[in-house]
Image 1 (cartoon, one colour):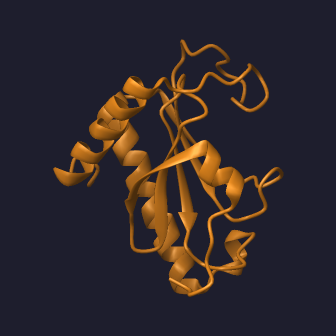
Image 2: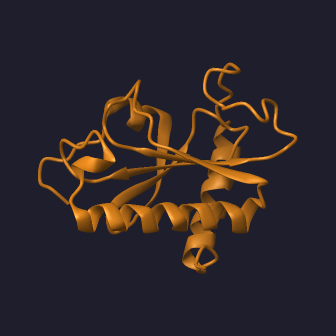
Image 3: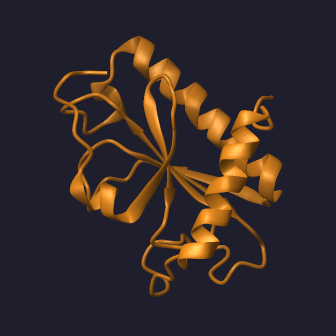
Length: 143
């Protein structure tokens, strides 16, 4: 990790840490409870694009995206997992990994901007975090 890395304040407000992986902070999107939604934030200062990472970090990010995808697949059995590094609202490099279901409220459209956000209530947030952390501790996300 670079010494001067700092999590963008919007990411800090909208997410909760789950675990620190070798490159990224794995976080849960707390601002939206309808979809199991993970965020990977590479702990490298000044990165805005995947191309800003060096070759080794880019490869590691892809592996961490795959691990996050497998975690969602193991826990929730989604019909599709969406992966995006958009960054229009928050320029700091972060990758969304979102479980999608054919019966979710906006399928097949993208989740962004379709509905007002529905944040987790405190108890549901703690339950979801415990579920994710337990799956990580027991290796349920490894392929």
